[in-house]
Amino acid sequence: MGLLTILKKMRQKEKEVRILMLGLDNAGKTTIVKKFNGEDIDKISPTLGFNIKTLEHRGFKLNVWDVGGQKSLRSYWRNYFESTDGLVWVVDSADRRRLDDCRTELHALLQEERLAGASLLVFANKQDLPGALSARELKEILQLDEIKTHHWIIQSCSAVKGDKLLEGVDWVVTDIASRIFTMD
Image 1 (cartoon, rainbow, N blue to C red):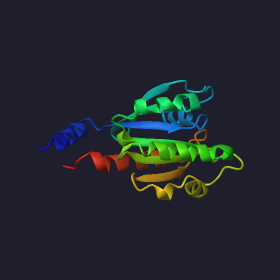
Image 2: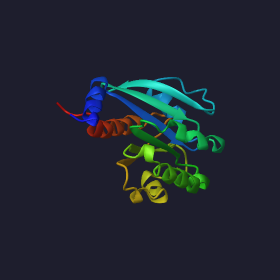
Image 3: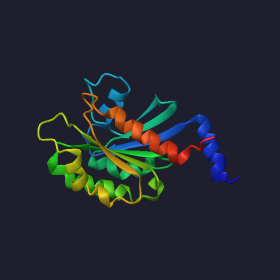
């Protein structure tokens, strides 16, 4: 029995996964985590550093690392890559002027060796706002079809309303589980 098999079996017993939530500032990362966890979202301020939330979902323990997205903090993102099972990239679908920056940052992340193999969920957030681009439009702008190194999906959502958050988290948990946890 190889080391990888032993580690997989250990993790299966724990059913614990590490999810890294990134995106540009004001994309809605913290709002998504709080809304999914049933917390109040009335007073959310920019994340200066990171927050860690442990959530239970479908028998899994999700350790969600919500990291600030301000330009001055992005160089620190690499400090959080280790042991990441799933990457959740949050996009403000209504902020058209920053989509080029959003695409550049996402594609740079996907080159990182320590994120190799991580499942990628792209949340096309703020679908409740007027002028928000659809998931299909964002898929094109972000050039998601060019991603061949990760399993990925784009899910439209509204963090404020809670719309489609469950579908996105379900997909990422299922994708991670199919790769990491052996079935007995």
